[in-house]
Image (cartoon, rainbow, N blue to C red; front, side, top):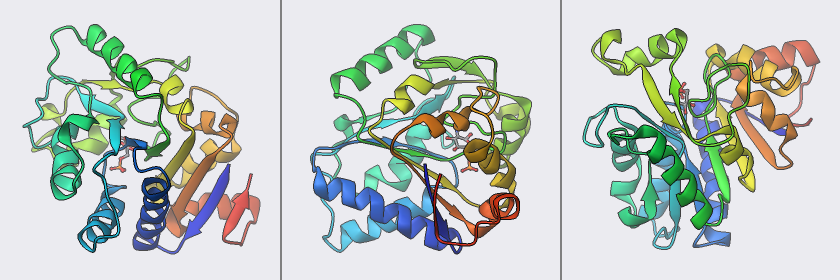
Length: 254
Ligand code: GLP
């Protein structure tokens, strides 16, 4: 695990966009695993800017997103399909048919999960998986639990996650109770993983994920076992790591 310190949200976003750009340049038909939430918004904004300048070409890029709320259509403004279109896909030359997000409306959600794992397999796996982290250590919507779930599956969202995501909805009652999420096997199968963390609300989860025991109670802790996991975190998110390890530098090789 390599941890890179960023000064603030903007610096984190630019560093992340640089790594994603490198992937797009080095492998023009790469499979990008993409994430939603407020954390990657700045990185997507930067990618759009570099695309407009003519520095990036997404025409052969394929993508698979981590998750989707169960019950929301892609047109719902809080669905993750909508988020991706709005923040990235509508603004660059990626082909929509090459972008994948689990369907929140599938009548048979289990079948949709199996189909999604098939899509990832057919694409030949993920080259670079972008991740945010929940305040409780969740990645995608893999919530803390007793086991690491391998494949794409349906999850019941924790109250903590629903409360934290309620800020995007008009009330907590509108936050879906379930979601479809890529499993830990899908995420760990990516050749490279890039986790972003910003803000003090992530400081404890980030410390536990990087330095605590590897446990499904803190889903992101599994990344300690990935052989190419990169974390870019701003100073607020690094606070607990700085305090407990005494690390003062810019790069930590854990
Ligand atoms: C959401 C998403 C995750 C995201 C996390 C943190 O619920 N399913 O993919 O990483 O929670 O979100 P944010 O970046 O808004 O803090």
